[in-house]
Amino acid sequence: MDDQSAVQLLSSAAGWAVLAVKLRDLRRSPRNPMLRAVCATLFLASAGVLCAVPAVVGYLNRLTGVPNFAAPLVYCVIVALGASCHVLLAYWRWPAERARPVARRWTLAYAAVIGCLVALFAAGEAPVERRTDFDTYYATDPRLAGFVVLYLVALGVAMVLLVRMCLRWARVAGRPWLRRGLRTVALGALGALGFTAVKLTAVAARWAGADWGWLDYRAAPVLATAGLVVSAVGYALPVTGHRLSGLRALAGRYRAYRALYPLWDALRRATPAVVSPARVPWWDFELRLTRRLAEINDGRLALRAHTDPEVAGTALRLGRAAGLTGAELHAAVDAALLRSAVAAKAAGLRFPAEPPAATGPAPVRGGTDGLGELARLVAVSRAFTASPVVAAAAARHRHTAVPAH
Image 1 (cartoon, rainbow, N blue to C red):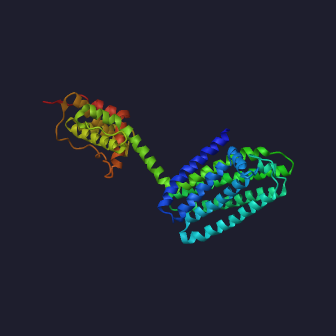
Image 2: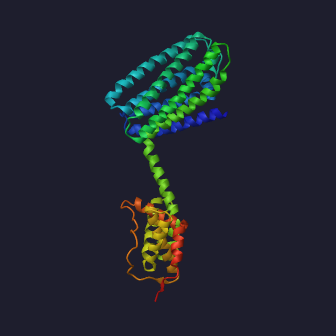
């Protein structure tokens, strides 16, 4: 098996897997026209790619006893796929009552095209099996040439209209993932247009007496497979895109969890009692993140008696001199206070319970939704380990504490 066949088989297998999931949904809502259109599109796309694999082409030809039976089968499936894409988009765009007549028109029109394809193939003579270059090999037979050209033109027209409709609708679609899905479908349709273009070019070259068969059996399958895969992604995005957003948010929270480690580790070493002995399951990331945030805040509270309020003023002055502003400045102040408190705790030093008047604006606290608190503590943790302002402020107050009694 060559690389091209392997890619086609993998693409088809992915399509069948997604179809299996959607069929489960269809069993729950068997009268849902959009789900029916989705399943039909997935079936036709997966079947079209599978039946175009040279080994499968040979098997189908042997099974039926017709030397090139796979050619009209694949072409009819792909033409039906072009119509199915428009049916699915109609149900995406309009309510079922309005989409149903549009779907019916596309279905009837392309059913007629499929009927013509079958008639032209049956009228032609194709005794020699051609698994990869049927189009160019039989391009000089008038009826088979008409069969090939009709198939390519029908597919090309469907894809041109699909690109235009998707791009036009993407400009006004309200949901972000719907807009992305429509543009991705348009990109996949452009791949299908490239497929029709190189096929027609190869056929025209054969009519002119040239041999550009490599366009037929090398370039065209690559464009077809790429177009189908990209289109499948586009059709999936409006339904599954919110899950991708969730994964992106989860990745951001995981990065935040890792960024909190230096601050958490310093507070854990300074005040071991803040760390709960209860184990958290490795798969429960949200619980681990919540635990880390809680232990950081508990560690901050445990270090209050060792916090030198003068460090805040020093950190503010040094931060402003270094050009820090806003949340970055406040994170540096918080980090300097904590770094100084950790050192004071290790030295057994305490500070007066009543701090002097603040020398600048109070540090900004996180939002009530938890996201602001997470972002703030991440900024504090990064400043705690990497900010020269924090290191300088903590160093200036290293020996100003009073020993605890």
